[in-house]
Length: 97
Image (cartoon, rainbow, N blue to C red; front, top):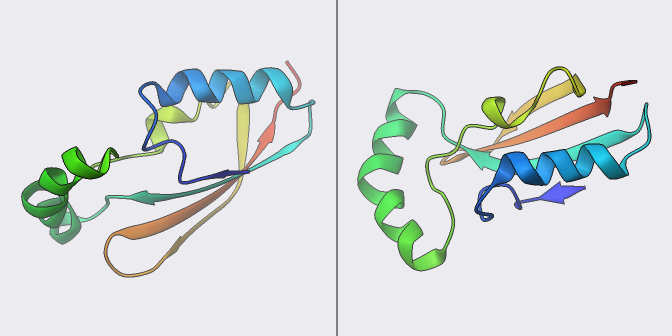
C-alpha cells in the first residue's frame, strides 16, 4: 500500500522499482494519491497548489501514468474520487518477469 507517497518523494520511479523488487509476482499494489487531471484542475494546481506545495513539500502537479511501468505492472483498477484535486486509486499487479 502506497498512500500519498509518490508525490512527496524525490524519485517516484525509483520507489516503484523498489516496490517491484519486493512484491512477489502476482502480488497486488494499492496506490492512493492526488493527481491533477483535466483543464480546470490543471489551472488550479498551476496557480494555487503549486505555490503551496513548496511549503508543504509535495508535488501538486502529479501524473501517476509515467510512474507505472507497464512492463512490470498490469493495471487491475483505476478509480478517481473527490473534487479538487482528484484523488486517484490504482490497483496494480506485479507481472511475472
